[in-house]
Length: 425
Ligand SMILES: C[S@@+](CC[C@H](N)C(=O)[O-])C[C@H]1O[C@@H](n2cnc3c(N)ncnc32)[C@H](O)[C@@H]1O
Image 1 (spheres, protein in one colour):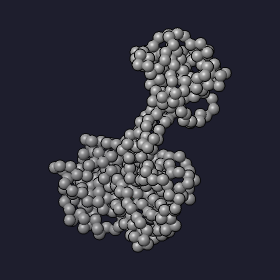
Image 2 (tube, rainbow, N blue to C red):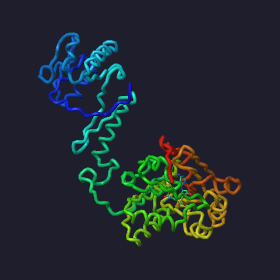
Image 3 (tube, rainbow, N blue to C red):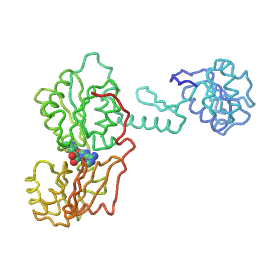
Image 4 (tube, rainbow, N blue to C red):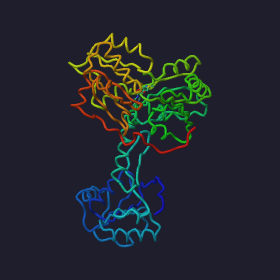
């Protein structure tokens, strides 16, 4: 069987013959009816539903076994006897007559398939078939239909109503937060922006499945930084966004977490505004909240912590001093970029009067298959020579103990850390 080519055919008023009267034949007749064909069913016995359709004149039934001449002048035949040999005979007879045949008991014996379908908007039909898994095809179609109805498919915003203009639109930039680790954490707005992107400027922490799924026509530029190494300096990233936008492209700057949470998104937005480039933001799920959450650590909890404070731990030690002195145990501290400074962090907190028994958690590579959660006290950190691997979130405060009761609250999706390989610049 060669690869099947999708084709939409007009069956209105045309003769379609269904061989068989059981549940499969019934399902196929039901799926064909909206197209308005002249359906003839050939079967010695009929399901209740087919009997009803015969009685209301919606189908014609020949109450007997099929004969070869039943296939004459048919545009389409559905072999649904419930028996593979019989269906195969029907399919063979169709082949000789050059009539398309859907063979329900063994798709490979037929020449056509009836896909799972759903009605989209503006006359669009959604169909899926193949893969030997009709249930999966149905689920794909249903999901697409649902997302379309919710206006949640990542289509260009006005795609459904606008004939595409031939004039080149002026460029713009969209700063999109991809969330941490798992591509499922991107927002619908972020997905829509990805669908619009002509140039994608990508950070190291943006989940790779998101940019690897981009159309081959999208230019992908990596500007990823790792701790201590900055392959593309920030001012050049700003220039790239501005230049590519001014050249008329829709530039999506895809960043891990939220673009405005310690992500230098503000500088990028300001560079656009200064250069007169229209800029939008697609907020993201920040690692500061989502990574502890996945490990069963809510940053606030009635009776345990009523506020939280997010800070960058790599900026030197003085700010952490001040933070420690100006907050108490009711405030959960969430430190990002702190993997390399764990012992310093614990020492500063103890020096500033935090109890050495204060719970602390270090969560590495949240929302990925490599995620790991370590939990102990400030003293434990000072006594060990543990070197967490970046990226990691450090959480300090009594809420950390909730991890013992809640455990892991999220499993990364199968897309986390995966994606098809593609060539990028
Ligand atoms: C430059 S900051 C960017 C933060 C990002 N804008 C956000 O909202 O999550 C990078 C730091 O975020 C934290 N981070 C990001 N993704 C993470 C992940 N999947 N697991 C743990 N920490 C993560 C780490 O502390 C990392 O050093």
